[in-house]
Image 1 (tube, protein in one colour):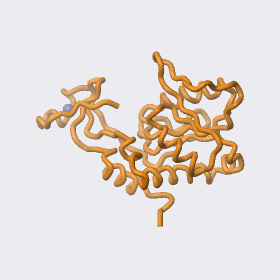
Image 2: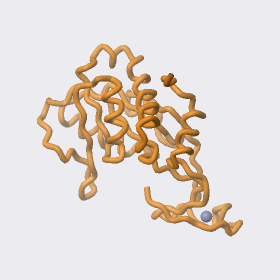
Image 3: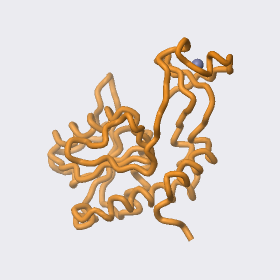
Image 4: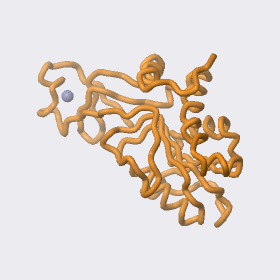
Length: 202
Ligand SMILES: [Zn+2]
């Protein structure tokens, strides 16, 4: 029996087990050091874990009256290709009608697919992880420019340093993560212990 809404601890166990969450000593291209690293698509390569996470996130939307009354005439939108597996899983779980995803191209977030003004249903924006909230905000802007209303927003993991709201829309999440990082090696406690460094990308 699949449990519909796993606890944050259970979600973190899934992320650890699949390698989507790792602890260690990591350096980002920006030069920042951090003791933890998320690579969320790793959790979405398995049918079972992808389904548990997507169904859990979809439940958070289905319990919203405004959203459930609109179904199936809802669009699920990912701010980037990384969020596509989440968007497909949530679309499937909600039987929502449409799916779209944006990409960053030459520094600007846009829909690669041709999208007509007014064709996007009222939408929910979903992502695998929200670190700063910038991708959600940029997506909100382009969706509104196309004449669609954003009725929901959610992510598997939200860093606590990210905003809790996207304008008047709350950002729902399965895990609220207390992210730590250091501006550089001098400030990093793992560097002080000479622990080996792994260079990673977002
Ligand atoms: Zn370090």
